[in-house]
Length: 129
Image: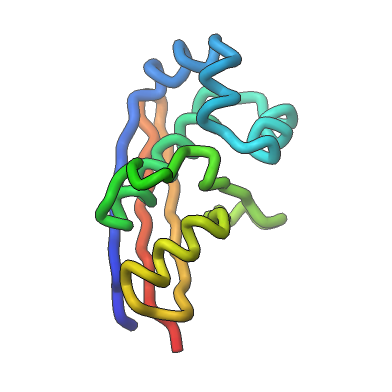
């Protein structure tokens, strides 16, 4: 396994709880599928906080943060039927990764966790054959 980048982020759930009262914040940060998915969730604060942390961790794993035209909505977090989270990225970010790391194929690993006060995310980008 060739690790190209890793990133971690922790966020205060109370900060996100306050932020998501502003629908403009939600529209600026979260994809339409994430917003739709939140409708089925009782604890919206932790749902959105984990996704916010995942997007930040992913940007850190790139080594760039949110610059070069990358924005939060280029990154979407989805869970499979058993609850495992995955990162989906825009074509723009896929091209950036291929160009920056001079590779053709890669995988992204994501781990999320939350407690009462904090949510955390860890991301690894791996080169594949």
